[in-house]
Length: 334
Image 1 (cartoon, helix red, strand yellow):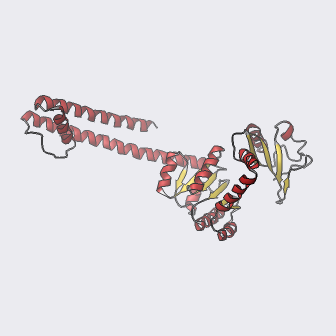
Image 2 (image 1 turned 90 degrees about the vertical axis):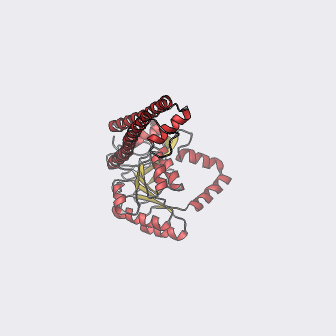
Image 3 (image 1 turned 60 degrees about the vertical axis):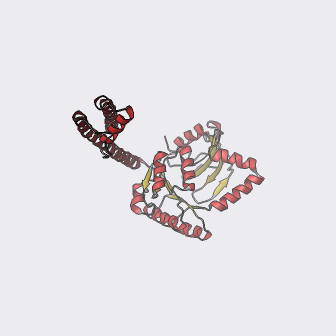
C-alpha cells in the first residue's frame, strides 16, 4: 500500500511537471517568437509530443534552442511518467493477486460459486447479503472485470480443473454451486469437486431434464432447474402471495428481523440429550424449531416439545438474527 501511494505521487509529479513544461514553453514562444497564444501552445504541444508537424513559422536561433530544450525535457518527462504509470498498474495487479492469495489461504467453511452468469450473480448477492464467505471461479474476461469492480474474491480459470478447485480451497469448503451455462460443464465440475472433497455439499443448475439424473449420479445433492422452479414459484405467488411473502422474508432475509437457519448439533453441544422443552431455545432465545433432520435421513416436521436433541441432528429454526447467532455459537460449543 505504501509503495502504491508512492508511485501515485510520482505519477502526479510527472503530470504536474509536464503541465509546467507546456506552460513555460507556451509563454517563451510568445515572448521569443512573438506567437499568439494558440500558435505558441500548438508549437509547444507538437514539439513535446515529437509529432513532427511543420513549424508555425521559421524559428530564430533562440527559438530553436527553446525547441531543443522542450523536446528533451518533454520526452524525458513523458517517459518518466509513462514508466511510473505502467509500474503502478503492474504493482497494483501484483498486490491484488497477493491479497487474494492470502485471503484464499485463510478461507475455510466457505462456498464456491462456479460461474458468474445471471444465476451466479443472484447466488453471490444472496451469499453477500447473508454475510456468508464465498469466492467465484470464472474464466470469461468480461466477467472477471465485473468481479474486480464489485470487489468479489475470485479465481480466473476453469472450474472443472482440479488445480483451480484446489486453489479455491475445495478441501476446506462447505459447499459448491455449479451454475455455469452448460449442463455438461456442471456435470464435470460436480465430478471433480466430489473427487477432491467427498463431503462437500453441491447444488447444481440444470437446463435439460436428462442432465438432472447425470448431475445426481455425479454427486450433486440438489439440482435446480430454473424454469421449473420459476414456474412453481409463479403459481404460488398467484394463489398464495401472502405465504410466499412471509417465506421469502424469513428465508431470504427480507425487511423483517426474522431468519430461518439450519444448525448441526455437534458432540460437545450443551443441547445434546435435552428435549426441546428443556433446552433454552424457546424460553431464553425465543427461537422456534420447525423441523429436525435426523442422522438416518428422517425429517420431523413441527417436532413436539418432548423431542430429544441428538448428536448429528440438524435443527431448522426460526428466530431473530441475534438469537440465531447465539444458537450457532452454542452448537459450536463456544
